[in-house]
Image 1 (spheres, rainbow, N blue to C red):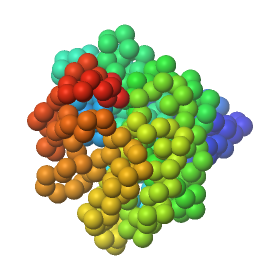
Image 2: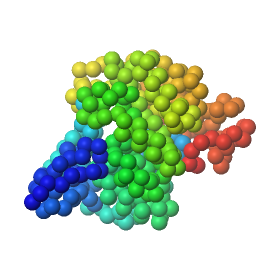
Image 3: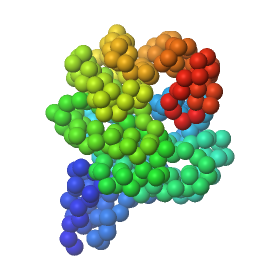
Image 4: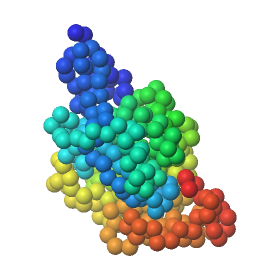
Length: 324
């Protein structure tokens, strides 16, 4: 049997018969490219939507979170390496069709479904099926993704995506190659495709000491978002803690995260947040970009105040971007 080329992501894996691609989830079975994790999620949890993190989508609601094993990136700092960096055939999995997932979401009182923890890109066909069924059941579909996907399959997925938290890891191609076994350009292109396709988009950036923690690095990310996406795009700067193969790296100082937030705010970004900060986090509050009223106050993943009414600031009637 001849080898197959997988055109889902920029790695364009050449997969021999009986073998899997770099993600370990896409398999050449007798000359047919097969997603061996289809209908076989390894994680099913009902989460607060703020955990994704998404701060401008149905605040305070629950979201049914689904993940399949494998990943097309191999980040040295991965926080979910137990499922993302494992061979799918070695892990126990549920048997759940897209219809069953939608029914479960409704049963649990969720208003949306998240494809998360690993990456919906590597269980692409399953992700699309879930999105289609979710739409029929008035549920939103959220992708939490590193955005390492080719243009054509991403554009074909757009009708079945409502919101995305996109992880832009570095603004440096060498670091993408060295730390994640990927490249930068496709991720930046994915961000622009999602925005052009009308999807609600929030960006997460994990700041790692001595890799992407300089003002220059942070400034590059802010400038890209501001110039190519818009000042209304929420940015989540997240604090690194040792994980996986980067356990020898110290946690990011909280001061670095707060400095990144200040740089983004000073640059004119309207919604800037920080993650993994201990205690009360002032940068977890959504403020009106016009009158600066505190609109959505959070304590951890809990909403303690929500003064956004029909997408408007209750104080000055300014439009607050998001899916409300």
